[in-house]
Image 1 (cartoon, rainbow, N blue to C red):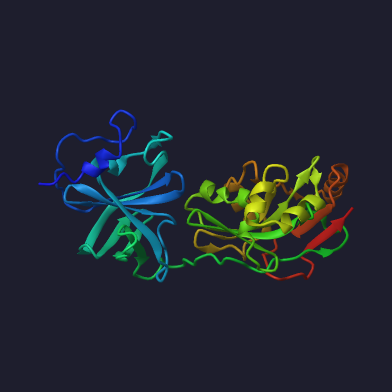
Image 2: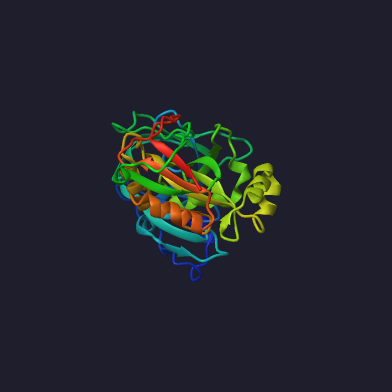
Length: 356
């Protein structure tokens, strides 16, 4: 009988990685266990492993589990793994095959509806992976490992995929509100208004007009890897900061660059993304929540790194916030009704721009 784990062993050194290393032949089980592992390797992906004939038949899915029908995700068929991999988590050393951090994203049991070399149809019964799915072999002559993964049954009740873009809610010029305690205040940055979508660990960026500017800001792409399987649509600003203040000239330089030019500018003219609102989170729109509720969700996301952060907001105390913005050489303050919903495209006065 052929050794189903020969390829697995051939790609690894027994003493070089913490991965399981079974010495004996695989022992068949009930063919009903699965694991999905989030794998931060060279590119973030999710490894789907299904117990079959004593091993884990495996696919690497770059954008993870599709949660609605009609969405096809690439699934790369990889070598069979040992059953001990059902619980494996750890850091595979850099330079080794699959080097990077791996964690269990979900695990549980599955039912087999159909299984052959062309189609694998299953029902997942996990904590996060639930429902009927099919792996389809595309029979691509250029890459025989090329499959797709698709959901077959309806999405979970209440689930909606996040839109790539919503028309931004806008602030109109105004004065400090008299009913100060009903407002929240943020510093104004005079950056480029930008919608940032994270889906399947990948980032897509659109400017305020809806134009795709993903290639313009390569330093923001790793935010997708940082958020992993979180699906979120953020509203915020792209800003260039020099000498501790927003730089209009630097922003204009980045605005004109794309592709290779943008990558060259990362070193001496880096951009920052200041996220100020969350409009959709893990299958649910958040537009109807009050501003303070949306900011609580945003704070829980822990969007903090060298190139992205969530600037602080202040409940009330508008005069002090304006004074601080002047002191730091900022262009002004944005006042937002603390209990107000997010109204795409609206500029009716629930948001005010108070310039210094």
